[in-house]
Image (tube, rainbow over all chains, first blue to last red):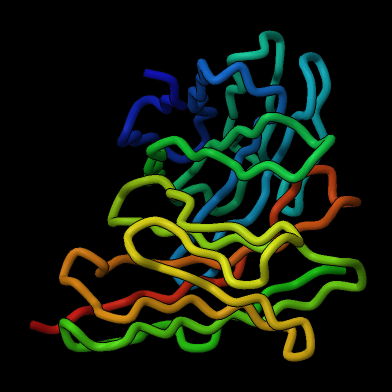
Length: 114
Length: 114
């Protein structure tokens, strides 16, 4: 079955530690996205990538970093510089930007930093 | 800049009653509009999308939405609510010049009473 996987489902870290969230897709999609979800705030775009080896900052990129070395993988690192990292993180992908295609979402990773 | 406003962060209906979730958008170019559903601790699933074809769009699970340019609205409806419809619903907008990025509303949580 094609889809997007995110691991782990739940992640706990101590303040001051960097943590990397995994996102893998086997849909052969060119574009991938990372969102942060907080209660009552909808989804906010952190980073996105339209093609391998290229990515752009979204609306709330500070304290986060990404890489896109392979088409199917788009890991997100939450650094110690992110002041409030506890949130639900969602990864998504789409076929590209040449036409309007919907985004497909993974199941999410809930990160708790104490 | 584009934006989305979802009127009502919480909506409660009785089982069998009409579901109406409101979404208004702002866009200086022709918009493409989406409704997504999210069940607790899960990713988002596409319900339906408007991409400039028919203004009345039918989606999964009996939902439909009507694009009204004059009212800048894209409200989501379902004639008869089921208990399984209880979830959070997100409206999103994009356009040809947004590089595939979606702008999400803050979400509406739907409760269904027996």
